[in-house]
Image (tube, rainbow, N blue to C red; front, side, top):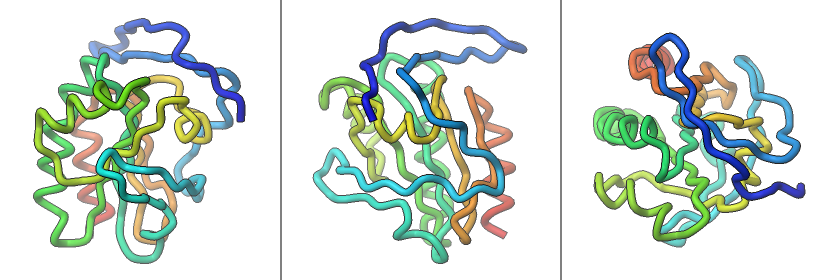
Length: 169
């Protein structure tokens, strides 16, 4: 897929929720609840290969798309770390996908919060485009069967908590 770099940034306010938006060329359709999300293999900032389908049938997954320049993403990251720490031993996998153009920018927020979950570097937005991501933060909560339980666009920590609680039952 021929994706463009981030072509513009904007900040939207909707119901008091700030969403940092980014535009990609020709994003594919959004991944909806109940669907099997597109599989991907990416390389984390630490050099490990991360394949989403490796968790299917084994673990629920929180898949988060973010970028260093995104204020709401910065606010959400400590919460992702807390979810990882709270549920990791119970099987939850948290995977973040950085849409930053440089490794330094991509590692800024994860290093600041000393996260232990993998952060996949996606500078061309290829993974994000396959998910139809058009605004960040964009978080999908995927159940143990590998189907999308929830798609959360923007910063909504209560919705994220409800979704994670639901898939961890």
